[in-house]
Amino acid sequence: MSTKFFLITLLLNALFVPLHAETLPPGCEYDKECVVKLPGTVCGDGSESFYTLIAKKNSTNLLIFLEPGGACWNSETCLFGHVLRLSAKKPTNKFISEKGLLNLSDPTNPFFNFSKITVPYCTADLFLGDNKINYGNSENPKIIHHHGFKNALLTLQAARELYPEPERVVLFGRSAGGLGVLTHVRNLDAVFPQSEKYALADAGTPLMPPYVNEESYQEIIRNWNAHNTLPVVSSTESMNHFGDLLRFNTLHFPHIRYGLIQSYDDIVMTYFAKSVGSPEPSEAIRNTIIAASNEYIGLDTPHAKVFLVEGKTHILTKKSVSQRVSAGMRLSDWLQLMFSNQPWPNVRPDLAF
Image (cartoon, rainbow, N blue to C red):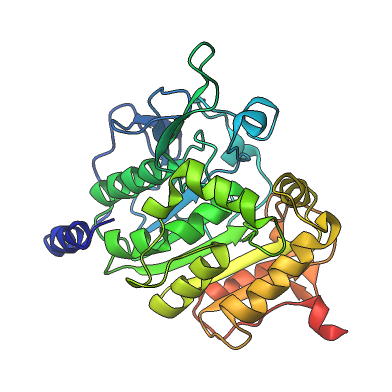
C-alpha cells in the first residue's frame, strides 16, 4: 500500500466522530448473521466475495474475524486438497453453535458484546496474495485469483464505514486467518487510528526458513506476488518471511497488543510444513514457534505474547477457553489480561525444562 493511500485513510478517519452502527446494511438485523455483498472482492475462482455481519445494538466494540481454510501455491497444492474452497460460500450458524471464543451465547466470552464482521477465506493465500495466475496451461487452464490481501483490506474499509470509530477493535484469525492477522496489523492501524486495537492469531504458525525449504517458500511468495503486499522495511532491506513480519509489527505497532496461540506440534501446520519441504517436518512447528517467540517477538516485549500448548491440536479456541490450560494458566485468564491491558505473561512450557 502506498504512503498516499495511508495518508488519505487517516484524513478520512479524522472526519468521523465516535458512534456505533445505527443504520444496518439492507437485509441485516441485530443479533443475526447477515451476508453483505462487497464489490471489488474476488474469490479464487473469480466469483465475487462478501462479508458477514452480526450487529450488536449499542455496541461500541468490533471484532473482525479472518477465516481459516488452508493454502495453495502451485498446480499440485491447488488441485489436491490443500485448501478448503476457492469460491464464495454462504455462512451457516457457526457462531451460534460454537462453544469456543466465537460463542455468542456465552457472557464470559471476551467478545460477547462485540459486533462481528467475518472476512470469508476463498483465495488460498493467507490474505496475503495479489496475483492472478494460471496453474494449468493454455489448453487446460487452471486460473486462480490470489487476491486475499485486497479482500481483507476492502472489508476493513467497509467495517470503518459501519463503525467509524469503535472504542475497541480486535482483528482475530485462525490458521490461515491467523497468518492474515500478521499481514493486516498495519492496515488495522491505518483504518482505525483512534480506536484501542488488538490482534489475536490462533494456529497462525509463522512458517519460515530454515524450518521449511527456502526455494519452496520463495515459490509461494512469487506465485502470490506477496512482495507487493508485504510492508517495505527500507530501500535496501526486503521482507523475506513471516518472522520478519512479526518483527516489523512488534517494532512499529507497540500500541497494538498481539497474541499468538499455538500448539507445539500442530498436526495441520506440520502437514503444511512438509508440503513446503521442511527438512524435519515433525519438529518444524515446535522449532518455528520457539524461534518466533525468542527472536522475532521477544521474551520481554510488553505488547506481544504467546500462549503455547503441548500437543498436536490445530486451532485451540474452538472449545471453551476456560478449559484450555498450559503451564498452570487458563487461556481464558490469559485473554482477560490481554484485553484488559494488564501485564500478561508468555505461557511457554518449553521454558520450564
